[in-house]
Length: 467
Image (tube, rainbow, N blue to C red; front, side, top):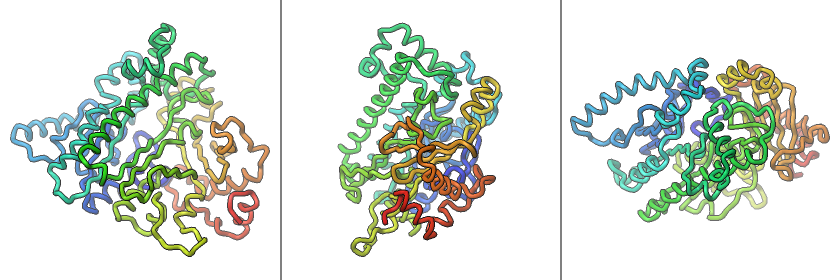
């Protein structure tokens, strides 16, 4: 979303990765285009670690980590006391940033942070999930009060929320609605307490399936966290609407990933590329009505195209970037002919999942057999085309699903439709470039022979293209 690139292109595939200097971020493009760019971040991997993702933001407020920032650091003219406070905080923050950065880059420190003694400490003292309500209030203040901005200066606000992330501690009223059995059953509460304190268990696959009550507990608590964050967002949008700001604000709501809660014996969001993880909500509010209210786009699209869509809205996109925007094309095509952008909505879509090396290292020490059995150290790639989704794990494991009729991916049909597997593997091969280069910067993403008549014929025969 920040670069418009796939992971193997931008190479930000580990917690310790840094964004290459030659890549320009969305915030940098908008800032250079005259926007006031502001980030309101509750995610320590974005707001705490020095990885380059804050580049281009004129104001970046962090609500997680040992030291959180506040709006008085967002460009206001402070007095001498405030200036001294900011100077002191910057000195202390520099030390703490290095400390927190070290935890993200060191296997030993990461393992230490997973111990039962340390988990409650960093969950609370480090504000692991940030402060949803405070970050939304600060965002609303900027968009409504617009201080100290010029009256006609456009604003780009990025808000990163963590409320639905593990561990699960939703307000009691939401537990009563979505997981009432947790309040009534000691066994369920004990399981939840163990789960919330077992950070390793959020990352590694299960050794066996959850029982019905455990699954019900995690599903209910997750739903409670979602509902709690949804209510906070509802209040945020109500503030903007009452202030008359929604009528001239494009709003994009999406997620960077879903969550495994025991499905296919996976947990969390580190080691899978199934739909539980990669199929996420995407809602766009466009007051200019380029996307009419209530419109539902059925084809699968990649969230990387939000980069191109925002630049298109801001009228800062190049022609090639405009072609990848999710907004309807304004080009005038001859009757009966689709524009390039409309065609791209029906084109193939890719996803990549590179296993976090620190998780792989922990599993190698604790559960080496499980690591091998579930191929947790292997990259995963997926391609969607038509009704089918192909998943390739490493270089030798292949799964094919009819995601239209089997969205939960229960039945692997790769043995039944070998020709479909072959065609989609060719797409993945072209996407990844040379196999040896996979996981590094790949130069091209569109199959070099995709427009070859023979390839087009095979795709038509398999139902992926119209005649």
